[in-house]
Structures are given as structure tokens and as C-alpha cells.
Image 1 (tube, rainbow, N blue to C red):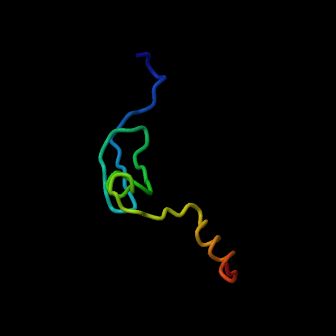
Image 2: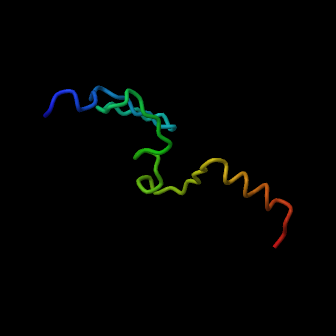
Image 3: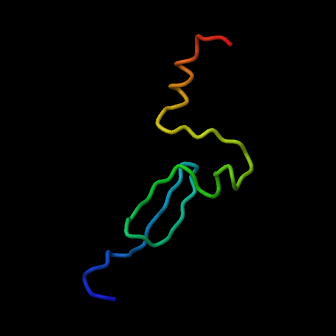
Length: 68
């Protein structure tokens, strides 16, 4: 490898919202994620509503007073 062109590759900690902590190596010292293999619906088999930027609240507020 050439000198001085590659980023520093050091110990890193990935932490999930569910509390799972994974130790690995990366160019960033800490990484925060919303879903991991312990809590992702594909791996757990449980249905989970994933809210991205308040879209669920926005939808329920918009259609709260309307009936079918």
C-alpha cells in the first residue's frame, strides 16, 4: 500500500438503539444505528413499525379527523 493515502483504521464501537453494542474496526470511532441484526424485523420475525423522521405521527395527525 502507498503511504499517507489511506485513512486511519482503528477500533470502533457500533451501538444500536436496542442496546446492542458491537466492537469492530472502522475509520470512525463510534457509529450509532437504529436497527441491528438483534432487533431488525427480518431477523427476529416480529413486525416492527420503523418511523423515519416523524412520518407516522404526521400521517396520523393529517387523517385523525377523517372517517372512511
